[in-house]
Image (cartoon, rainbow, N blue to C red; front, side, top):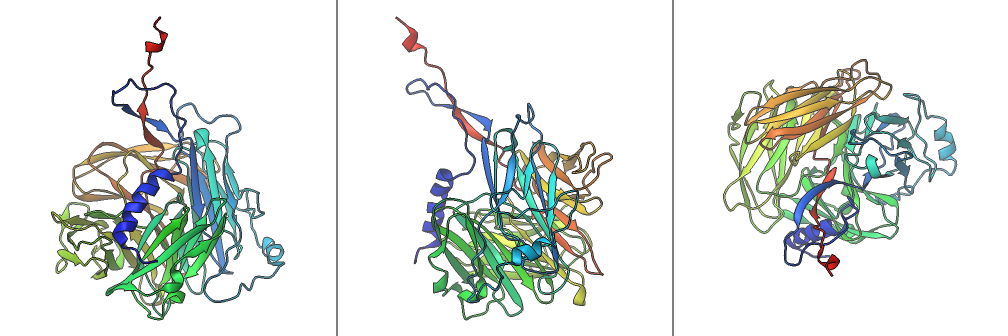
Length: 520
């Protein structure tokens, strides 16, 4: 289907309002005639999340973690937030599904217990259930055919509900740590940094949470513009199912760096790209923040050996941005890469090398006046030679109130906080551990134009994994990410998750009671 990216963008903006997953019970009563409603905020009543199938590797282990921050009044009796399997994936890379009918019986024998719980994969039976706020729950599996998951939370467990999957692939293509925060369904996703090059296997996983089929277009954009990919148009995603699509099967022209756009013609879907490289490992590529005149990409590790920026201008106007690295003491312009011109409809790539020079930082893209909008992502490499590992940092929106990352391990998590404009204060809270402990909070000041990199506090006497919640206290915008590093056999395995706002509350008009009907 031939549509301009601009028209898709406008359509997406409307659909996002109509199909948002946060739902509220509106207050009773009505406004006085002609009087503008007063805006207020209320906790969301329902939340939905989608987690793609974690891996097809026979030498991998996946941990699922779910968490809801404590709220006012605690959880209602019987309230739960569940992650359940969806239907099995249908391959769309031209190959037959080689799984055997008894594969589920054989692979079930490989499930091992961790934190006292193993992941269930029976249809209709939750993989894990969260029953109280403030304490994460986990489940693990070593199945190579673990399904995609559909999550739902209601009532007191919905505000801020977060789920994450972390997979360790011990060997083979995509060897490394693959981490992803499960995300709500939407109608449009941009993935700068995908690839169809030789040696890369990038699958986009498209999941449909609803009871009617969804239809999506998979659009590819390279350095020279739109790439012909007719088989990516009108892809049907059956009800309550997931479809993984190998990007290189959509085109005969291998492209090292490209931008993928997943656009729903009908319905709403979840989407994420799993990138696997024969030499440099792999990770999940989460979608970029919505296109804007500028972008913030938080959390480049201090020991990054290679940083690659991939940017794309989805509108009709070219984008001109200045490039700055926000480090621990201030912002600098990378020599030779002080500015960037991104042509409309074309993917632009900049290799920034070992940009951080031993100091962790964040990349800030600032649009010139009248400049077009951009989406962007970083591909970050750590290690050298055959001990390299990669991860991705997409453009990340600011935390308006609170954001959470669910799966943290003792001495393995690094939190990056960046204030691109004014100084800001943030409160960071480590939850109780999945096996006990007491929450611990600490307040940090992030100076203007800098990145503060810290090891988050850990729960007192905590055991098991824990969640980290970031709350904005005062000051200017704050963007955040979390790096989880679990080195193995000399490989610096790591994954980086952006921490967007958890959208635990939404603005609603405040109704005023009309007493005129009581007169007479």
